[in-house]
Image 1 (spheres, rainbow, N blue to C red):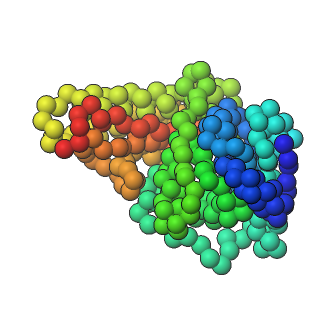
Image 2 (image 1 turned 120 degrees about the vertical axis):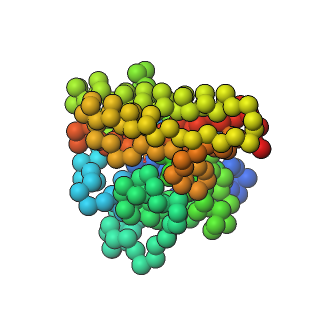
Length: 302
Ligand code: AMP
């Protein structure tokens, strides 16, 4: 396995692989690797001859007052994990390598994201997805992967990146890897290390709420007899879940059902279409997000 800190080195290595007709997969990460990242790497291996993992805590996707400075960094450990998982190349640039002398500046050119950015984390973290697109677009230009894997855990990110490659005609396939969870259901995240032991015990309630709410919603869909029926999203049930989380110490940022691929808040479910129920909440100083895909497929789309 190779470790590169420099873009040109990456370009050279990848271009050598290309000459041998090898298929290249990219797994972009911010490091502090856990089993979620590992599952992305494994999916990448199944879909390519060579896996590139990038490790870069991207300053432009953090807002003022967010955890950029405190974000866990453990490059040596991450590199060893990648080696064990059969990764071919780890790309770990510093800020200057990625952004030149401007360091952490947003740049003169930025992506404007339309309605896909209006809800969920796009609304809660202004500028976040612009920063994500800035760095992911750069990584795509540097690595030129055939395929890139992103996690369902950051589902808004997945849809926005897929839109980026579609609208900019980049020849990279975007795959989604399912969310990897702890035994008690908590979605694995590099940020989970911030949780105190008491908070860690409460954290699985987030996924429990999501599951309870979405299971009821899919059951309602499955009980309808007329294909053309639409199902209202039960606001009272949603408010009850929000209250339950608040009563347990969560500060809920959003609890929302959105349609895909436009990621608009939806009051109704049309059978056969894909919806997401997503939540973000703070527990103490830790921001947790999670989501589930809603099963509306028992009945065929009308
Ligand atoms: P991050 O290092 O947090 O920026 O995440 C890098 C990639 O790993 C993103 O595509 C995330 O969606 C994905 N990821 C993070 N946590 C998980 C998880 N628990 N399960 C699956 N993928 C994840």
